[in-house]
Structures are given as C-alpha cells and as structure tokens.
Image (cartoon, rainbow, N blue to C red):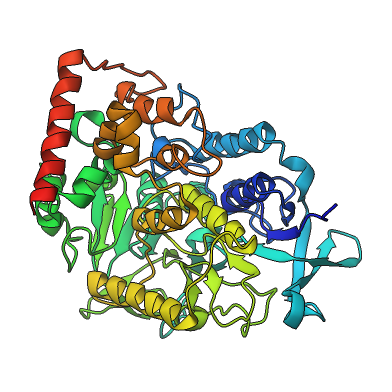
Length: 526
C-alpha cells in the first residue's frame, strides 16, 4: 500500500485553511503550523500589539470585498450575512469552514516555523526539512514531501525612511499597530498613505481627534461599498460580460460617472494622477463626508520631519503634530527560508503564477497568496492551492523555465504599464482563470450551456464568484449551481442582514438568454 505524501503548510489563515482542505481532497496528508493560538491568521483581533503575535485587525475593520467575492468556492457565507462583514463575522466564517471540513486535526497552533531547508536527499526527492517550535517547548524537525507557504503578505510593516524622523518628538506608528481611535482623542494626527487602511484610519481617528490630516502623493479613487441599486461595487464591476465584451473605456466612463455624482475627487484634493482602474483605490463610505466637514484635511506627500511636525513636498509645513501614522503597506517576508530559495525581494522572487519558484529543480514548494489583489484574496489563494497540489501530484506539468520566466516578466510589465510604476497589485480574476484552466475547472460557457443554458447565461452575466470554479472539473460541488444563481436571485439590497428577493420572471429569463446569444454571436462575427 502506497504511503501518502506529506505537506507542511505555513499559516492557518484563509489561504492556509484552503491549502489544508485542498491537500485532503487530493489524498495528501497536510500539517499546518501557525504562531497564533487560534486559526484565522490576520483576522484574529488582539488589542495588545506589544506581544508581536497579534493580527493586523483593528476593532472597526470590515471586509473590502463582498461576501460572494471573498468566500471559498464550495462554502458560501450564511444567507443572512450582510454584503460586507465585520472582522468577527469573517473570523467565525473561517472557523465554520474549518469545522465543516474537519480541518482542525491537521493544524498545530501556537507553533512557529523556525526554518525550512532542503533535505539531505533533496536533489533526488525534492523533500524538505521543516523546523518548528511550539511555545515553551524544544525545536522539532520533520521531513515533508512538499511545502506550502501561506503566511500572507501582511508580514512586515513598511515605514519608508524619511529625513528627520529621528528628531520628531511625537509618536510614529504604522497602521499595523492601530486598534482603536481612543488613544488619538483630542490629538493632531497625520496619516500618510493611499492604502485601504490609511483611509479607514484617517476616517475613524477624525471622529475623536482634534484634527486629522491625510498625506497623499499619487492620489486615489474612493469606491463606496454599494453602487447602482445597492449592489456591492465589486459585484457590479467584476463580471465576465464586462471583462470580455464591454470595452474598458466604457466601463471606466460609466463607473466614474457614478463615483463623481455629488463628489469631486479634484476638489477634495485626492484626485489621482492616473485614470480609474490604473491607480490606488480605497473602499470607504465616509471619507468624503469627513473631508467636507473639515475633520480630514488633505496634504501632499511628506518631504521631511521637523521636531514637532513635517514639511511637505510643496514646501508647506504642518506643526503641532502629536502622532504620525504610516499607511504605506507591507514587505512580504519569509524569514524562515533562505533568500536563495524564496526571495523576499519582489524583483527577484520569480514565482510562476505567483506561486512556484522557477529557480528550484523540483516543484515541491509553493507560495500561496503572498500578494495583494484587486479582488477577494481568499478565493484566489484557494485556486492557487488547488493548482499547486496538482503540480505536486504530477497532474499538471509546468512549462519550460524560459516560458515561465517570460510569463513572469510579461505580468510585471503589464502591471507597470497599468499603474505607471512598478507595483504588485495582482488582477485576481485573470490569474484565477489561468489557474483553473490548468486545473480543468474553468467555467467553460459552451460546455455549461449544452447541459444548463440558464446557468451558462448567469455565469456570463452575473458577478464572477468562486462558485463558478466548482461547476466543472475535479472536485466539483453539487451546490455550485444554486450558489451561482442565488447570488443574483437573492441579492442583498437592505442592511442589517435583511435581504430583498428579486425573482426573475420567465419573460426576464427569456430576455437575458436572447441577450446572451446575441453577445456570443457578436463575438463570433468578429
């Protein structure tokens, strides 16, 4: 009887849990290690940041992607969940996922991965030695056939070196250290950055602080969580019909019209240098209100620190500052593995499909979810895991190294052209489509249409959801059809968990089918 192959998984957050479940699906034996005392990774909230083992969650954190875009492909959120959920709800969802698929027995908590290195027989077997340490115990070494790094991209807070920071008499923080607005009461605060968390924290601290300033260098677009008809912004934007047929310029024009109704990005001082979809964005419903009321004042990029303030790039100064909070992102660090194996430098990391290091002779290690994405990262990480595990098993063959390197360079160039500068913001749906085509679970419209025309129509016209990757192929899910159809038939239009059901009449269905056939015909005509 063949012995099952073993997999070491670093992290038990959203990507780590998906990796454990995927390994079990494919008959591998996973062991996940996580330094936290409970599963969930960064979604664990701990008000004490001094211990060094707390997550990156602040008390008011709410998801930036709606529930149908940020869930696993075969485990939807409960039907009464609001479209965007607080961190406590998301953490409960992750725990429910672990319980439903019986994953806890494969997870070692309160255990730090100390070192990952090739085994003595690596040249022949591709195996790895993983050294771990449970809190208060001795280091343990184990040999694994495969390794999946799922420690996330919120690992090392990045604070840029700014002239004069050593003479500043106030407090300098990173958003990773922020939990509540209480310590900022009656203070003058400067938030630096154009990240999602920078906008959140600027808004929240402006409620209790004496004054908040927001320093932006490139500007950013502000997306409200709900758009036309109360639809979540990402559900409105990310559809196969818009991605394959609607020109980008038209989608940009329509959505920008919505964004600029009653709000002028230019007048508020945050107008980006580049067009919509080509620059940073924040998901926030209150920032314009706080700017309009003067609770948040916009300033340009910072040039240097003064003893009690800062000087900006335009030469103006701001004095009397109590606290400066950097919302400048993170460096992705994997300190437990040598840089020659998996580099911490984005420019030299060279991961095929952002997962497999192309510099190693054996594809027996994969990096899952070590990047930010413009869509929900949980489903992207899940499909990366499904793809990587099938590579481990020999069910997917990697192309030659030269081809993989060309693919990496092409993706880097595309992102640089899109944002006008080197930037790691991975388009989630295109990447997921590439992965699922290799897996064999891509939602091929023609195949689906032959057996279920209405489902094919909805896959094309409805928001792109993870459920569509469980309709066909290996480990398909019987509930995928209902989940795909349900995301539109019972779309949330209320708040507080109340849903308004909009059943599609038979005439409505015929109209959509006709439109679908017309669009396909237009594509064939081209």
